[in-house]
Image (tube, rainbow, N blue to C red; front, side, top):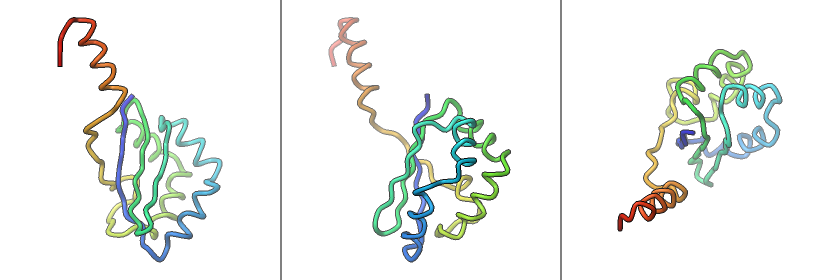
Amino acid sequence: MKRVCFQLRIKPALIAEYTRRHTAVWPGMLAALKESGWHNYSLFLRADGLLIGYFETEDLTAAQAAMNATEVNARWQAEMAGFFEDLDLPPDAEFLQLTEVFNLEDQLDGLEAREQTGETP
């Protein structure tokens, strides 16, 4: 499973409304995300509008394509577009993907494998 972390920026004047809209996301949107392969999806919002998203998927390109094929996503993206700063494309197409540099479970798995083979760090 691939871990994906991304960043966007919410317009500061719209943070309260953006947050309100995410307290009860449309059921059809929730179903589409799940069916399209978006798992363990979370959004984190800083007081100045920095938005960090995280999800897990088998294939990012396929998950994005599957969402882009849904009518509910087109409606959701159209409604959300005005909340973001500096975007020329819909938010789900223009997020800045961050590079993962550490994961505890991966490190522990690697350590365990090295210990089993007698390698020392």
